[in-house]
Length: 193
Length: 84
Image (cartoon, rainbow over all chains, first blue to last red; front, side, top):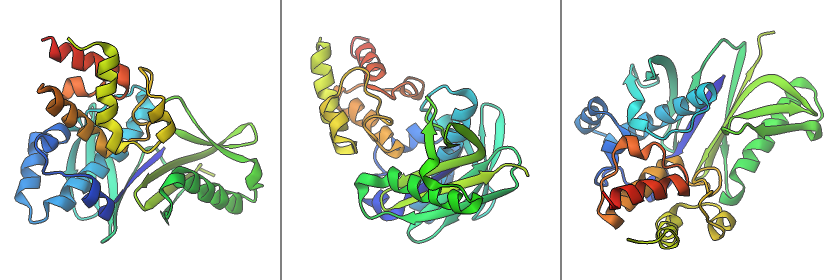
């Protein structure tokens, strides 16, 4: 199982205000709020922590299938610029974050997988975000595995977790798709061979 | 006390800036899901909750917020807080 989250920094500056009254309190626990208010670049930390929570939220959803939105119950610890850990419901997961001037990308992995591929995608039209990511992912898998892309489909479970199918057969590949503003990303984790 | 139709209209105004699926927005009803139907960014869900707080001058604690992923659950939270 792999899950990811991307944040478009320019888009976030336009569409979200972390300094809005009540915002920090709804998303972060006390320790995280203290950390945010003590750093020189709170904006980056807010959205890095958010991407960590979001990636784990998706990982967790697969396990429990209960939809709940309470980010303050997911607690983050920063190890260094890239690595972190996130705890939810007594489980702790490692997260990896890649941050550029344009985006923040975080992923988390549960269970061993032989190889994980991550791709960041530039999106121009906001209408087709998920479709574009889906098509790119299918294209990549079709090349990797030598399968006809027309027979590959991505189907979402009732709790929104995507799976990859070849005709009617579910493939032993974990995928995760995220998009935000002008960026999308997908992760592909192939099964142990 | 506002009736349900009025509350849905209020909610429609509140979510309007954040929606990314116009068709689902035009057909908003109790069963509409904020993320799956309206395609609201999860980062903006908290803005929806804060806007609701501002609109009705109520406080929504994080435990109440966690169910507010669709219109129906949000209406229930709003109604319980307004009448509290």
